[in-house]
Image (tube, rainbow, N blue to C red):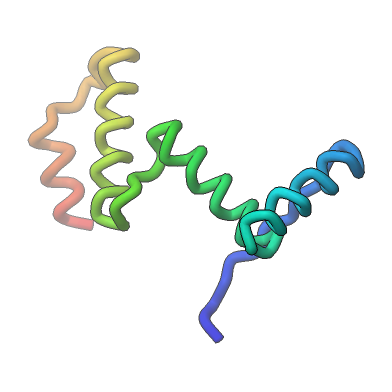
Length: 89
């Protein structure tokens, strides 16, 4: 069995839990698979993850970091210095 990360999900009421079970059943999925897919889709929508794999996830993360850097302005360190530091690690 492959290692799996565990995540607890606490819901506000039983009605939401019932709706999730019904939705998962209609799609022939387990509740765990349904919730995992929904979370992954949201991560993709939010730009935290790419739909095409791990390398694309890194590109999506770097793209998001670039956007944040543009929003907050320069950080006082040149890009060349950051790249060199990254290579040393």
